Image (cartoon, rainbow, N blue to C red; front, side, top):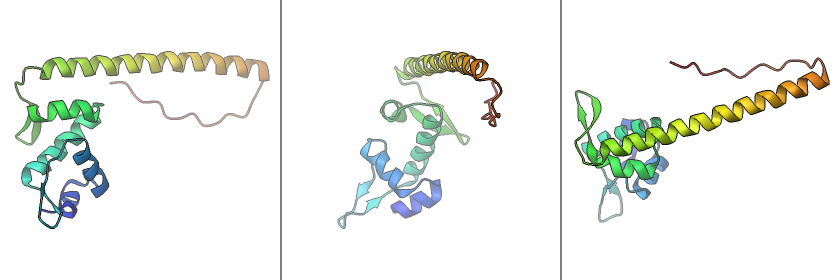
Length: 135
């Protein structure tokens, strides 16, 4: 299949598919005319890439983990590559650290905002952005 068909099948635009190729995540065959030729395995790879991106992983990390995942009953399942669990734990720790830093920054900003509001007196309220629910 060509890139347009892969884009239609996966819902990922052509530019992003080319980016995945640049990052070493996809390896289409190049035809004599320069067109990219994709297979069903590339459809699964794009689904895996999207799932791993949604989990907060970088494309560099995904490039390391992608060979270690496969489909099982429509779900992406990590295989038993030696470093898979360690890499996933490392990424989990990195994301947890980012969340902690963001919460600290949010609390600091809350404090600054509260002080500013106390000094300025009543100010017309702006709608608060929606807060993500923890689950």
